[in-house]
Image (cartoon, rainbow, N blue to C red; front, side, top):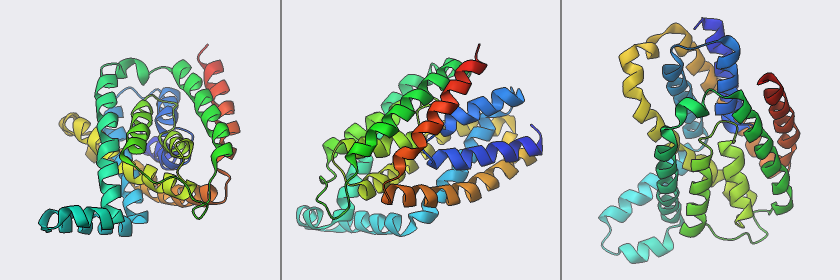
Length: 271
């Protein structure tokens, strides 16, 4: 992989990991376009960790508060009372609950990765599905102060299942999980916050599984991979802040036409 290819794919990853247009789908199409057949695993691991770092930066205070609440819970004698009073703990339990179906589905689909990550036809079809989900979500916008449903373990499990299905390239993880949260009754701010916090263990877990193979190839120290990772972090940080602004202003569904167009182009290119 050339350095310029790593930078271009890093920009693609940074933009599409958070904008609801499917990062995995765009990376597959990008690697097919550049005819990259080697070093793909190491590159995917590295640029995904770059975008995880962007989530940690944006939600650092939330992560710090949830960590502190969890440590207090572990050492507290009155765990039941603390659990009922601390809203951060509810988020922790919901993230853990949502991560379970994500992991199970991810493991189940791993055996099909040689099919899932090489087909522009599949990517095109799933981008069309993503567009439909985004467009359908516009009927479910709820303001933070308009009495959206509370985040519960049941709703977290549902969103976790949706996140697991987003392993399929072309299905946007951020788009599908934020939409799923709104479909389940959450206000759009809570849906977005939970979606991105839920992504941290999901992305880290998936990359830990792959990192051993990536280290064995030595690909993680390739200049193109390093440049792609740095670029994915910087671009991802900007894209995440942009998406949160669009979600808050009720313009989340406007990415649907792009997904439809990209899906149609991917389908045309597959024939």
